[in-house]
View (cartoon, rainbow, N blue to C red):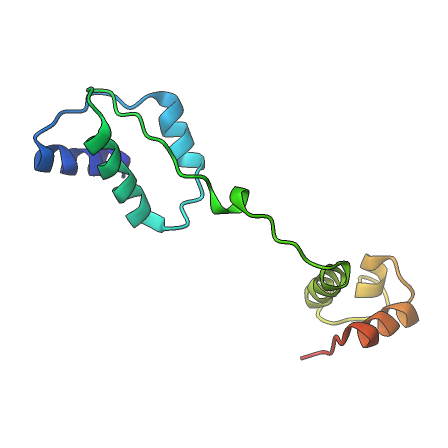
Length: 122
């Protein structure tokens, strides 16, 4: 897609790009693209506008996932983890392969935590 956008904007801007550095292409492939394909298209256009050479260097924006760290309480994390395990075990609380076994808890301890954290089967 990157080269397709480059070719599209070359025509519009009457410019020519012969090369995109390998490290730039790798960075483009690793980026999470929260804005999807439109973000890539805009980034290529902006890079062509600001570039004066036939080698296209692209500066990626800071990834939102790296930019912000979500802060939550331990209780909220515990609730989410228990809910995730319960969902993965189909809400099986005791026995082999149960949520209690996966969490390393006694059945009664898990039930107590569920009550305390307000976790109920949907």
